[in-house]
Image 1 (cartoon, protein in one colour):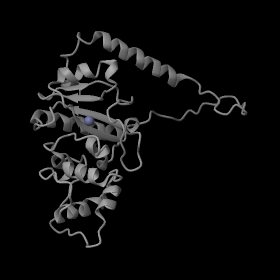
Image 2: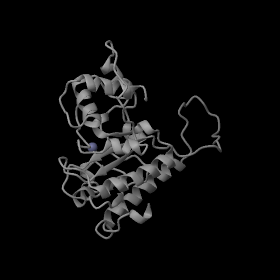
Image 3: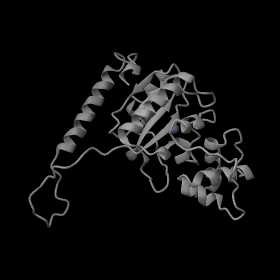
Image 4: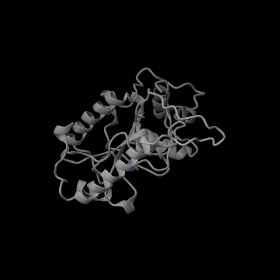
Length: 257
Ligand SMILES: [Zn+2]
């Protein structure tokens, strides 16, 4: 991974890098603390177990930046007042900018839900692709994204189903990554699922909304859930209604989750 990391930002970000170091150190000190007794009626002496590890991310959430250029995004993610960040930013030329240790919690997902997981930031890695929101992604971007995803999947044992988009977890709020994002190519590489409807036909009584819920979508706003599903799996048709083919796609997909 080191080979594709960018060196372009050094210098400009000396001051914010210092802030990063200070904050990381404060968290390290927090972890080192012997936990306080959570129940004051108990007075047993602290016995620390010898058997533990770090909590690991279990999801990858993919975004587009909706900005014009990586420089803007690096600036946004290093300004405290924006309160937003991601672990990785991938620029149009393929440069991978790692901005936060994978074990720490980035602020990329916001309010969202996937299945019964509601604190997505605590359990995920956020990856931002430099893109204004209305254009295709570059080949260099996707190639290096696949390299990053491979490493993350291997290092943390992230399940195939858990590589998803921001719009998937926040259907009524977000539309990223845009409809040009190659989800089928990702699935072919083991990141997320795709469908094959050549031999699939949804039964008459098939409840497609319930199936979207099983896949993970927050279906409390069913129109928003349909739109998010189509942005990911149909892409060329953004209408907020389910055609016969859309129902067949959901029927084929939901059995994989
Ligand atoms: Zn996003």
